[in-house]
Length: 109
Image 1 (cartoon, rainbow, N blue to C red):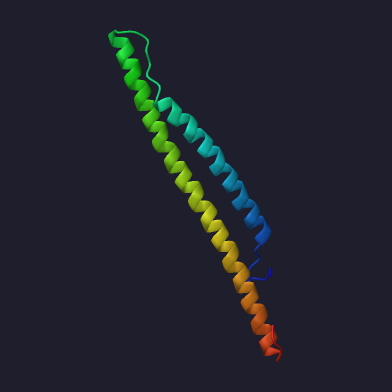
Image 2: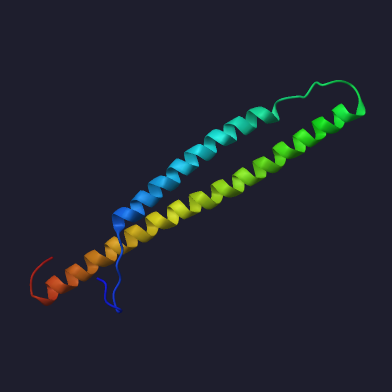
């Protein structure tokens, strides 16, 4: 429907977008695995103040990136779930309207 009182939803486009979000989640999982391997790395560049500072900054950077990745992953996961929910609800609304029209005509849907 495209008049002012209706709606126009492309269910397949919503599903395509949800699949794209799923691909992004997979990419984030790969990045997360790589980041996890970095958190296990102990920098061994020597026993002097700058080396300790570098190791501390490295650990802090890994922690910050881990937090950022978790936040992004949660947002993308939420967007994927909402997109699929919207698709299902519009498909259900279409089916309900079709059933009402058929019932009004005196036939089963």
